Length: 216
Image (tube, rainbow, N blue to C red):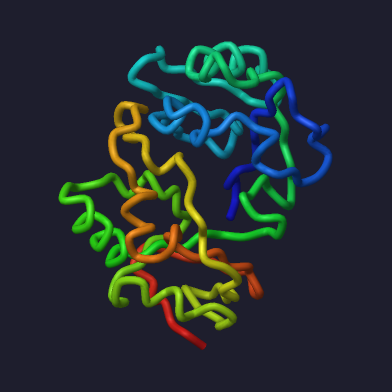
């Protein structure tokens, strides 16, 4: 998807130079520094300028390719001081720094989200799951039966590759950046730690809000 994880912030213990895909362990992330989960971003595609907001930081409008020092300085106070600290801003055109070693998009079900809320006995922000595409109409956890199948949304065709095994990032409140619920414990009561599915794009095209998702 355009601009999805185009940039990533590598920490000072990274074993990557940014020239190719690298595993998430090379980057500062919400699983290790939950405060990061409260960042919201708005992108101006024309200028490739991002406006970042966080409840504990002043707003920042920055061009990551030319103003990386300002970006690193802004994000530094949000990083757990016991963890590796932000060091470089990487950009990976044509591939993106996905969580998977293959180029992927993530799909999440509103019904499955509702099922987790029922387990937790409280509402949860959908942003905790960081899904690219949200869909409704399927039964909860039905998406796990789609592995290996092709999907069509708009003019895009996707192949479902994997379930998404979740990490501690989902335990953080995306309004505050504070860990407030044990989503992983809730998922494990179901015999797994998964939410959502990864898919690869087999035919490029366009997607719009309200497009129908179909198994093909």
